[in-house]
Length: 436
Image (cartoon, rainbow, N blue to C red; front, side):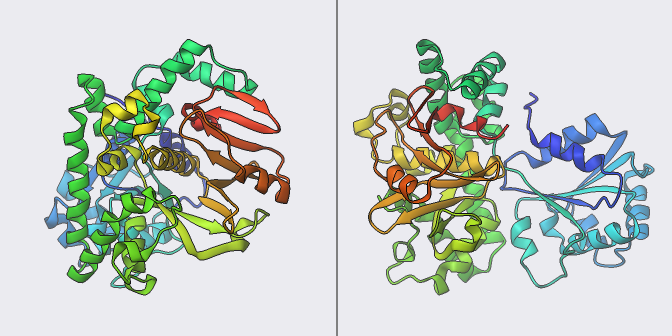
């Protein structure tokens, strides 16, 4: 079953670069579909490809302990795979490259001495490996690309809902409501997505069996693999701290003030004790970090409040399972029964923003107001408010608008499209339209 991923367009732009092409590093959490999409890309756009999984093939990894010049590596791979590696025509895929740090170092020499060879490196813990000191990382010699779980638009494509996507995009452009029946049906699909999430294997399981119950086994397997990575790719004392941070995520998001607090990880916990562990989760692609800004003016990076931030999970479906919210409560949209729904929906919007290449920022004004997200959209700094239902009453947006006078504001909710008081009302299911 082929699942369309928009990252293919970025891979094609890399392939078609005429000058100064560097090896590409594809980063992302385990199970986001890196291997699948790279093999599909190779089959569709190259004459042939060579695939090496350094985690599974230790014999090949061992060869990188010696000479890692491009000439020696190409000669070795041609012998092992019994095929000629043709510049520009053969794609070389180094998968799970974090298991062979010398292979990471070799990318520098391909960039400098053999740019005619097309090489893409991928790995579930690449972000972690990059920060190690044992081997030199090819700084400035590789192009880095982050891959995330499928967004809601990719989910709809996999579901065969292309005409619905067209209708959503037209309504978004015109800010005119969808027909009520279509709006309700799309909200139901969106609620399913909150449970299923964007991990390709989970989406495929749902599409194949049309059963919301069977997906949890697949999701749990992914969560188990994350725990296994924490033990395998971190020292024992670090692993314990990483797991403690990871296990605190649901509690962190359940708070009214979702700012990450180390004391929730462990009584008396501090940044010096757990900061590195928390960074590990972000570098592994398991979590997303949303930074606090003190001013709603450009450039927001000049007003970062580094000690304060929020942490989300990179896949909302996995968060839903981890939180143990019963599926039927989300599907039935029983507002009174789900105190955690607001956190799940806010997490969903965070995943949409990073999928669109936007940085995650939020703003507060003491105890007076909090804007869930502030995003740089077409050179404007736009406040984004997230509501999980149809009740959109809030004074925070008014406080921000009065202080900074943005060109417009965005409010995501379960209400239909509209525009009033310079606020774009956008249904949660249409968040993928934010940047086309």
